[in-house]
Length: 356
Image (cartoon, rainbow, N blue to C red):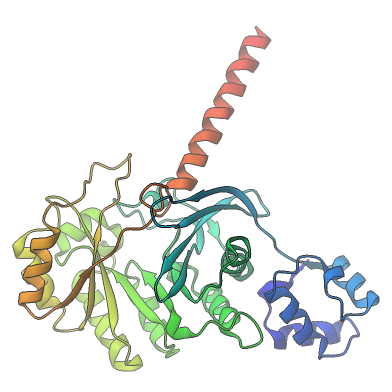
């Protein structure tokens, strides 16, 4: 079955020609899909014959809301979407004065193993398709009844570990005949896959690259981010410098403030020194508590920020949204996995009792 929503208008036109239909039908189908149509019968300007062909040969993805939480504090909405194969991913809608931002996932689970992140618990299950990524933007917008103007690829998964599919998603969501969300309104976050950062730079996209740095020294970063053993801090910073030189786009450095781990004055000084090689904006993030992790939020965020500012670093502290609904990445999916495991255990116990 052909995944229609993962195809560009040009590919849809070629697909239509293969079905014996006019090429211009491809653009029409793309426009219908971008409005959230999930059944060919809803594509009212197509012939019945073509609609029948689409139903027989194609798949139109449509996630189901498994769970939805709305923050009473700031209106943030967190969705747990059930995909066609039963796996679940998270999406968060955040409201800002400058517009609505949706944070989407790129994989089911994650294999990067960062010590402070709930998304990596249980490892990576699979990559998402371009249509499944697009659906998170599209159906969040439709369910919430508000327009989405900004996208961050900062949910479950490492986007650059699903490189080709993420590029396809960017092409689809940016297309003027579709959702038409501009590249400058899209941020892509990576934990630091140096080879993929260099590859991405070659496309010269005008998106914002966010690098999850979280420590300026290899000893600390090795401990909390296993990816650093493959790509040490020095290599990562040099890749960021190359990215800036090629694209002209300043990088946003994400830095989760962890008590007694990465929040010392010495580390603030070293961070400022590192960033002389690849200037950008530092975003200090109050750490979210993850039950399975011993790491706790820093009590020195303000001091750390002032020390960076004294070095001339452009630094802000991220505003926390959705604190009452587990809005940090991976927590809602983790709870569902725990509930599923508990239910399986109850079923097993009842079966054992019945058999005896």
